[in-house]
Every structure is written in C-alpha cells, then in structure tokens.
Length: 232
Image (cartoon, rainbow, N blue to C red; front, side, top):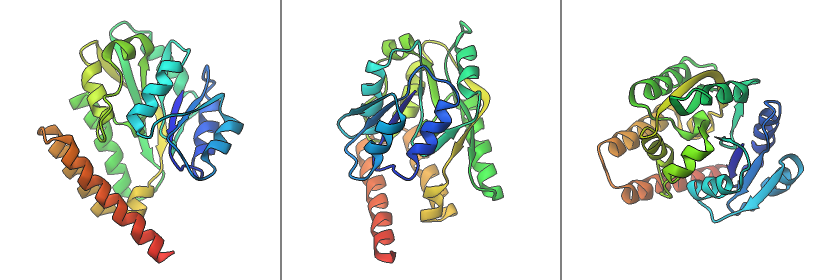
C-alpha cells in the first residue's frame, strides 16, 4: 500500500487505519515536503515513511520502487478503504487476463449529486478503461514496472497509467468500496467543481497539452486556498 501525501494531517490517519484493517503486506507513506503534522502521523501509523520530491506521480513511483509486495495499491490520503478491499484486489489480480483495477468509488456525502458522480466514475472505468487515483488503483508489481509506472506529469498521471496498463491486459472494477472525501466540492461548490473536472477531463481526452491545463488547474486551486485563508 502506497500513500502519497502533502499536508494531509486531517485525513491521513483515517486512510492508514482503513488500509491497516485490510491487512496489507506493508504501508508506505511518501511525503512531498509537508509543513504540518503529516509526517509525524505517518511515522506513528505507517510501516515506512519516505521523503521525495513533491509531485503525486513522482511520489508514487518512488514508493513503488521501494515496495516489497507482489501487488501494489495506491491510495490517496483523503480516501478510505472498506474492509476486505485488498483481499478482493489480490484475488482479481491472480486472474491471468487482469493486470490492474480499482475500487467502486463512493463520496462521503449523502446528497444525490454525489451518487451521480460515483456512477459516472464506475461507467468511465467500464467504458473507457480509465481509473482515477481516488478510486484506489491496484496493479501487479511486475506489470507496473514494465509499463514504466506513472508518467511524471502534473495532471492525469492516473489516466495515463491506465492507458499504459491496457497494453498488458484488462483493468477490473472491484466490488469493494473506496470512500472519497468530498472536500473539493465542499470548498468550491458542487456544480462549479464538477464543471471544472469535466472540462479538464474533456480537454485531456481530446489531446490538450498538459502544461497549460496544469497551470490553469493550479491557478484555480490557488484562488480557492486564498479565498479560504481570507474567510478564516
């Protein structure tokens, strides 16, 4: 289990504890230079903690290179795994035609709009074969290394990895659930955040270059963080 982090003190403990109850071989946290209590929490709860250059793809590749297991699972720090999720993932990856997969996403908000988001995520995996990182990607370690791992790009490293993995076999959608924090929608407004996500995803699917997309994405996040700081 590999968890990339950057200033995730409010979520990391729950992520690690949910992974621990699934009985992974080991839990690795790869931090990108947090200036809050993230590393201290990780040192208490994870098996091994590493510091790496910031960037989710770089951090996950860093962890994968040091992982010891036959299978890899990448979990975002604001997500939680349901009990038994890793057991199902391991069973799926033992099937010869499956090389990777992800879990069924469920945002931790009861509003109907989030059920639509979850259904759309499941449909994306089934129809397009694209798994996103907040769905908890799991993969055979040998295939991950053969594929070259996550492309070290500023956005959509998870979708690009899915494309790479499809050259080796099929991606599975597990029945087990990964619970996802709705914090981005709560911070930015549901419809605004959803529109932005779909806008970026559509631009990516139609081949828009990633650096300009990343600049716009980061500018949006900076404005949101500035707004939160001003209001607090």
